[in-house]
Image (cartoon, rainbow, N blue to C red; front, side, top):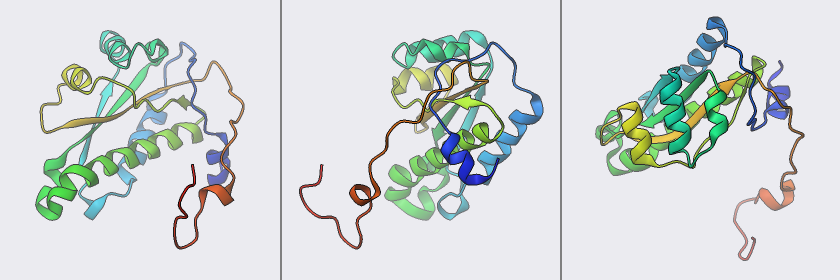
Length: 178
């Protein structure tokens, strides 16, 4: 798929086929994650690859009962690792850059899945402590996003987006925009 086709095709899909993902496709997604830009190229995140059905079920419960997650054969949990860039960037690296790094990596996985004919749904609503427990992420590691990946069993229509004139602000933000 051409890059802009991938952007237009990407959807948050919440219904999945009960079908395994080919090893080659999963490998391509993992390689895409490793290509994601990060602050100082320090890659201040970890990715936990979850295929165990019970752990996936637990992640669905910890994600405020988003049960569709249970149908995915693969779930990626992106965890911010502030220790990887705290020396280079101090407090800003610990609290912001590591989270940005993790979410950029998740975006790359999300788009790579789309390019490969797979689907995913970015999960940001979850119990941080419970997800950390499930995947064994001890402090200061912090879950940033969960990404179930599967073949789609639905093909949602595009959703409306804000018009560019409301979204893009040349040089400065005007007050009062909602």
